Picture 1 (cartoon, helix red, strand yellow):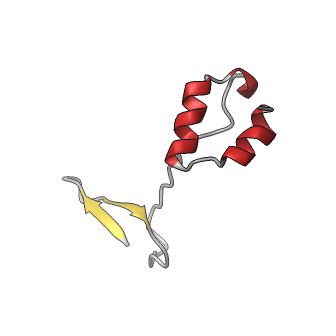
Picture 2 (picture 1 turned 30 degrees about the vertical axis):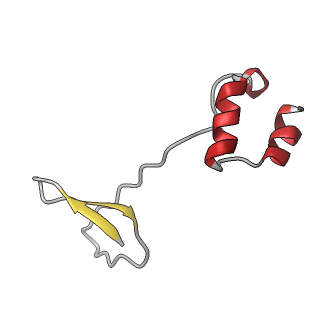
Length: 68
């Protein structure tokens, strides 16, 4: 479990498993990414290449999705 605290006493976790909570606790989950808002087929090839290099997508999957 990785956590940080801020001045308001709230705890921020980058990931957590088995966090004990009680009835009055409030848990806020914020996620990144989403479905997008443009046609993915028009995505910049340099951005796709950067994603492949970073390991976010495999070259084989790139070919399946983007048709190259």
